[in-house]
Length: 82
Image (cartoon, rainbow, N blue to C red; front, side, top):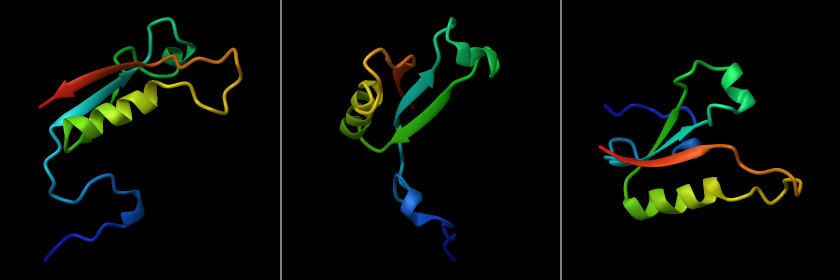
Protein backbone atom coordinates (compact mmCIF):
# COMPACT_ATOMS: atom_id res chain seq x y z
CA UNK A 1 0.00 0.00 0.00
CA UNK A 2 1.36 3.42 -0.94
CA UNK A 3 0.74 6.53 1.11
CA UNK A 4 -1.51 9.12 -0.43
CA UNK A 5 -0.23 12.66 -0.82
CA UNK A 6 -2.87 15.19 0.21
CA UNK A 7 -1.62 17.94 -2.13
CA UNK A 8 0.46 16.32 -4.91
CA UNK A 9 0.66 19.64 -6.76
CA UNK A 10 2.85 20.97 -3.90
CA UNK A 11 5.35 18.08 -4.01
CA UNK A 12 8.89 19.14 -4.90
CA UNK A 13 10.11 15.59 -5.50
CA UNK A 14 8.75 12.07 -5.89
CA UNK A 15 7.87 10.21 -2.66
CA UNK A 16 10.77 8.00 -1.59
CA UNK A 17 13.28 9.89 -3.73
CA UNK A 18 16.58 10.44 -1.95
CA UNK A 19 17.34 14.14 -1.60
CA UNK A 20 20.98 14.63 -0.60
CA UNK A 21 21.57 18.26 -1.61
CA UNK A 22 20.12 21.01 0.49
CA UNK A 23 19.91 24.69 1.23
CA UNK A 24 19.94 26.00 4.78
CA UNK A 25 18.14 29.34 5.02
CA UNK A 26 18.69 31.62 8.00
CA UNK A 27 18.37 35.29 8.83
CA UNK A 28 21.24 37.64 9.67
CA UNK A 29 21.56 38.31 13.40
CA UNK A 30 20.55 41.98 12.99
CA UNK A 31 17.44 41.23 10.88
CA UNK A 32 14.16 42.26 12.59
CA UNK A 33 12.76 38.80 11.75
CA UNK A 34 15.06 37.29 14.40
CA UNK A 35 12.97 39.02 17.07
CA UNK A 36 10.01 36.86 16.00
CA UNK A 37 11.79 33.48 16.01
CA UNK A 38 14.34 31.76 18.26
CA UNK A 39 17.98 32.68 17.87
CA UNK A 40 18.91 29.48 16.04
CA UNK A 41 16.05 29.59 13.52
CA UNK A 42 16.75 28.05 10.14
CA UNK A 43 14.88 26.18 7.43
CA UNK A 44 16.22 23.44 5.18
CA UNK A 45 15.08 22.61 1.64
CA UNK A 46 16.26 19.33 0.05
CA UNK A 47 16.78 18.36 -3.61
CA UNK A 48 17.73 15.21 -5.50
CA UNK A 49 20.57 16.74 -7.52
CA UNK A 50 23.24 19.35 -6.96
CA UNK A 51 22.20 21.15 -10.17
CA UNK A 52 18.58 21.42 -8.99
CA UNK A 53 19.72 22.73 -5.59
CA UNK A 54 22.07 25.27 -7.17
CA UNK A 55 19.37 26.57 -9.54
CA UNK A 56 16.89 27.02 -6.69
CA UNK A 57 19.55 28.63 -4.51
CA UNK A 58 20.34 31.19 -7.24
CA UNK A 59 16.64 31.97 -7.58
CA UNK A 60 16.17 32.29 -3.79
CA UNK A 61 19.10 34.69 -3.52
CA UNK A 62 17.98 36.91 -6.40
CA UNK A 63 16.08 40.13 -5.94
CA UNK A 64 12.35 39.57 -6.22
CA UNK A 65 11.17 41.13 -9.47
CA UNK A 66 8.24 42.89 -7.75
CA UNK A 67 10.33 44.40 -4.94
CA UNK A 68 10.87 48.10 -4.51
CA UNK A 69 14.27 49.43 -5.58
CA UNK A 70 15.32 49.84 -1.94
CA UNK A 71 14.39 46.24 -0.98
CA UNK A 72 17.08 43.56 -0.80
CA UNK A 73 16.90 39.93 0.35
CA UNK A 74 18.12 39.62 3.91
CA UNK A 75 18.62 35.88 4.11
CA UNK A 76 21.73 33.76 4.35
CA UNK A 77 21.73 30.75 2.02
CA UNK A 78 24.15 27.91 2.72
CA UNK A 79 24.56 24.82 0.50
CA UNK A 80 24.55 21.59 2.54
CA UNK A 81 24.79 17.87 1.77
CA UNK A 82 23.85 14.71 3.62
